[in-house]
Image 1 (cartoon, rainbow, N blue to C red):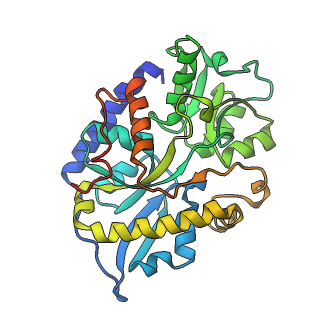
Image 2 (spheres, rainbow, N blue to C red; image 1 turned 90 degrees about the vertical axis):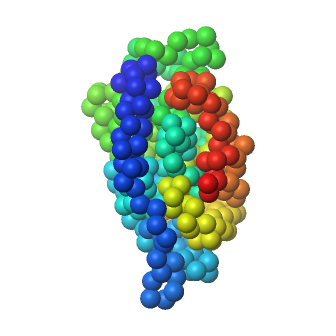
Length: 321
């Protein structure tokens, strides 16, 4: 996908979301037989959701009167559709993609961010025999990315612009992260922009080489992801969502204070293979789960590099109205 086509694809995606939103569900969350409010939640396999597992395993949600029904979403990329369509109450999504949809007037709410990018966590990798050595070398080549509006796309455009170079010859292909090793080793793409633990796996098993670190772009250490819901559900379930944020914040602090705890729960719940535990770079887990300033900065970059067509004011993105 050429970079100039990304905005067109985003518009098509937003149109589909708008249709879904017309029939979306946003009712009052129910209670189970124990009197706990039930929140249905899905997430992709990612090291970003360590705090979710910590909160589950340590009874932090129950302490807030909540029962969390979790389901791993292996396909990823459809979080907004899932919450707008009522399939789940909450879903984990990359912040840039969610902010793009919100900026296109899709009634989403960002309940809580989970983590921030750090150097070494998300990188552009090339094959061991590739002649590409830096971000400038990506021009004229194809790069696998996680989603059309991923921060990888923004970071590469930003880095090339800083060098006075155009990025319109870079071809971006949306590929699920689990397929990144295959598409790179088979030559279907020239590079992949990928995140832990796939990054560590590809370096160890394929001899892949990092040529660009996303955290080195003008985006800096941006918010990676967070849990979103529909505006309707947020309005009707403010107390339950406040409890969710409180429990998640406590668990995030535990993960930040003790990285070994994060590694253990990620191994236990299948996000991380034990053989890569000492090779990955953990993300920085958020303790300010409503970091408006950081999300606004990311939204400003979305406008700067053409992912949205008008400024996005994220105050309402965190709101309940």
